[in-house]
Length: 128
Picture 1 (tube, helix red, strand yellow):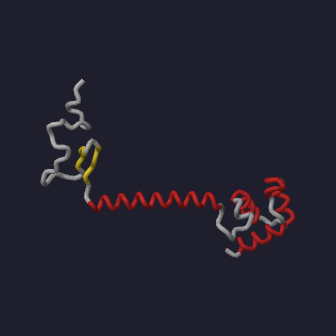
Picture 2 (spheres, one colour):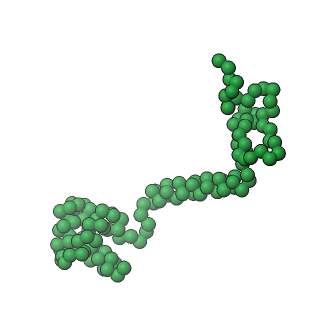
Picture 3 (cartoon, one colour):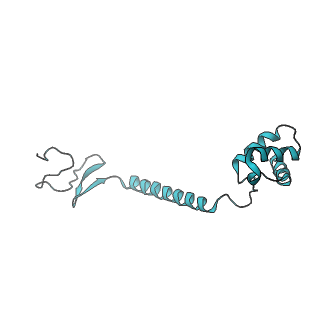
């Protein structure tokens, strides 16, 4: 089986990478056995910037995962499902005791906020 005609194999008699004047970019070739691409320097800087931005976003996501929710959130705001449930109930007219009972019924005693926490959350929600 011959490698002639394969785009990834450079015959030994040809130079590894040769740039001709007026040749459009990008150029594809091999240098010391490694596939290379020649692009404009502004495109290279843009690619490096995108790579750095993606790395920063990955790092930020990992730290956010480790830290959990931002400080200053109430226990209700840290549990989005409970917060959404309460916001929906706030649209009706329910007492704090009834809101608490609904949370206990839906989420159990471990996740259900106290009536006083619900009152603080509702006051913050109404102030927005």
